[in-house]
Image (tube, rainbow, N blue to C red; front, side, top):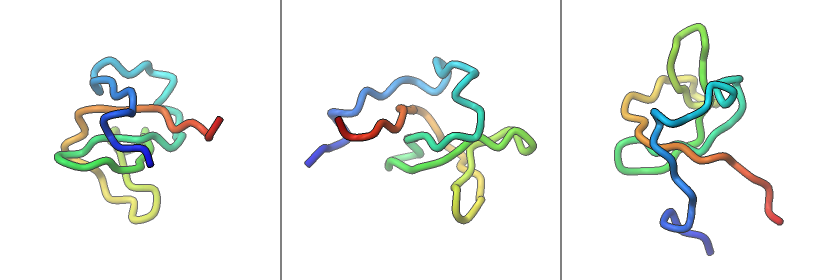
Amino acid sequence: MITAKYIPWDPIGAMPDDRKDGRLMLLWEGDRPVIGRWDDGRKGWEAPEGMHLFEEITYWADINSPE
C-alpha cells in the first residue's frame, strides 16, 4: 500500500505550465489528496466529475501508471 508520504509532492508554485493542459493531476487540497484538472476558462483546479473548483491547492504530483 502506498501512502502520501511516498508520493513526490512539489509546491503548486513550482508546477510547469505544460501540466495545465487538462490532464488529471494528483493535488493536495487543504488536508487531503484529490484528483483534479486545470480549467483554463475558469483559471482554477476543478474536480473532474463534480466540476467544482478546489480552493486550497498547495502541492501537486504527476499521476503515473504502475511500473
